[in-house]
Length: 362
Ligand code: SAH
Image (tube, rainbow, N blue to C red; front, side):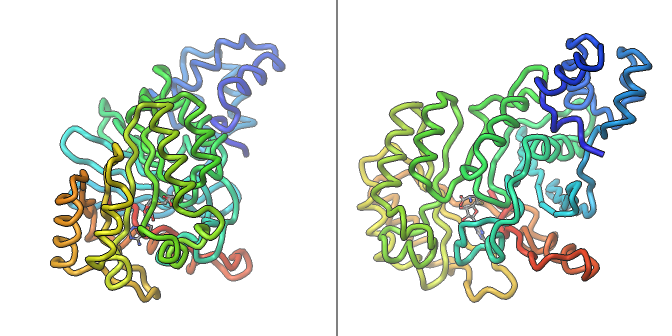
């Protein structure tokens, strides 16, 4: 049975009109799911009973099912969702002071192939629909006590968000609506591997999203080793697109940099990175690598991390080190989904077993 959120507001209006109901009921249905946490059409008591019954015959309120749920002492929740076609994605709720942040996936798997990331190990299976992306948000929000709401979204789960930009933006539009989840664009961070044409398209949308670019290396040869798609793009084109985004939106761009011991955490990498980014209105977000089972990469030593930070700050850059959250549950993000996939019966299990390894950090 299809999920009603996949229709979107316009689709639901159309469906209502075609079925001889007033289109205005569409907003009510969405408000029930997004704001009043309805799990069932039956509770939507301000809708005619016949309409509720008709909806229940053809649609599900939520199409994805929580098949794993882990919770850490620091309030982090990690969910593995089974989508209606049997594929799995992970999403995470992070809680800190007044922030309630949803970390969401945009694709099953990932086509970018960054060498240290578990998500891309088996390529991309498919894009998530706008409805599926919204359902991640709804199911994460439903973990909060009633009356509490999500305050921030980070699009840092599985997949490359800019490879699924239309559905992502459609979901974020609903999330941002005051009748939706009420999470404004300024509280949304989209993290990308760095696709220059798509970054420009995002800038041209004229929305106030925060953009984070996964740089991971200061030179093209090193970046191409870590992020294979760099072969086609190259750092200069990414920086030009980042500058364009800043000019268009006025929003400072973040450069993410996953530190891999002995590979990109050396003093000369820090010096080259400082030289590359000097003079830009940019923030560097250093992410100590979260180790992934089966991959040969390691976290940097504390001394290497400190030296890296000092070098960048000494050059006048703004630097943040991403804190690890929910670390006692199931190591790095993605291991959980992997385990769920491994448990699948062989007949229905495609070769795909990938997952992200980072969603518990921010
Ligand atoms: N495709 C997007 C979103 C990926 S997830 C992108 O490339 O930005 C968000 C961040 O987590 C990216 O910077 C990604 O490189 C990083 N990441 C992936 N696996 C990680 C791991 N095992 N440890 C630390 N960070 C990781």
